[in-house]
Image (cartoon, rainbow, N blue to C red; front, side):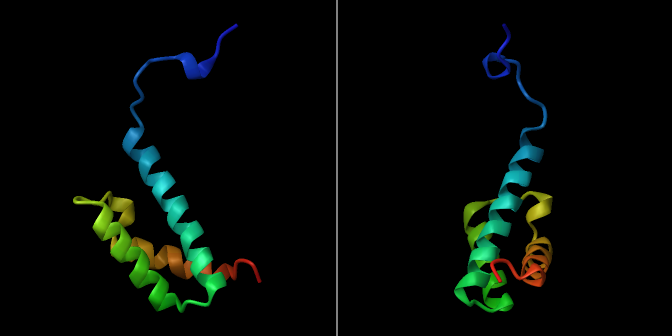
Length: 81
């Protein structure tokens, strides 16, 4: 029986997977800010500041513009309403 998690072969998609996970986390945080009553501008400012603090060199998918679009899209869905 083979178990895929025991495979020790290196992965080539590490940076893409990291960016995907970071984007999902930002989406969840934006939804939380929406439910807490933060404005879209305040949520965007908080999330961009967090990413700027966390990364010395940001992945392309985590630019200020990408974060603003993610927050806008999340607020447009009205999560938890």
